[in-house]
Amino acid sequence: MKPIIGIAANEQTMIDTDSHWISYTPRNFVSGIQNAGGLPLLLPIGSVEDAKSYVQQIDKLLLAGGQDVSPESYGALPHQKLGATNHRRDLFEMALVKEALKAKKPIIGVCRGMQLLNVAFGGTLLQDLSLADAPLLKHVQVPTPFELPTHTVEIDINTRLGEFLPQTYQVNSFHHQVIDTLADEFIVTATAPDGVIEGIESINHSIMGVQWHPELAYFTVEKEREFFNYFVQKFA
Image 1: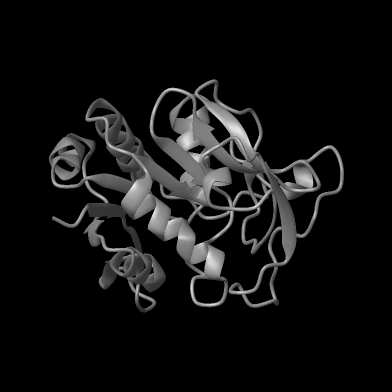
Image 2 (image 1 turned 180 degrees about the horizontal axis):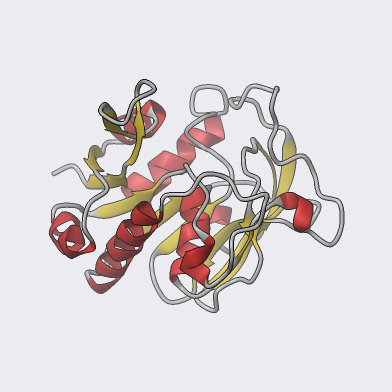
């Protein structure tokens, strides 16, 4: 049986109206999981009460990118630099994490997904890169295409990331929020040259996250395909 990978879906309107919403995930998440031998299953945003039923249908959980995590989720007030949020999505995904944790099912987070994992376990976020104490790298690489890496990260080779990625690695970058206080549940597995946390993993459970976007570089960077292969076939 192929492992079923639940992807927590995002939602948006297709046109400028509130009457035509879609639930979606980037296609490369779907392709990456399929090519790695898994069956992707989208989990649309719903009530927290339904999270347990969704998790019962999957073998592993993937949290994708998207809106900013609402500061309400970590007890902060919204800063002027805060982008769009969807607190309903935050609550649903944190419920999915809770249920996956109880069911001992592996979880991986990408970009916002990593940030949400940190918040779900009691950590906090910096709501915008401009609020850092020192100047940071360009972590929103526009106008450079997202399938191209733009800065290095240093990976702890004694972690799960170190099992399939080299110690010094080039990644793409598309985020304006970063981890501020790291939750006690996690250790840092990858760091940018400016100190921004680019990877985390749990010390107690099969949970990991990366700040960059493996799906966006899936067809241009061979090592990003290893990310999907590892998650689908080996991460347990």
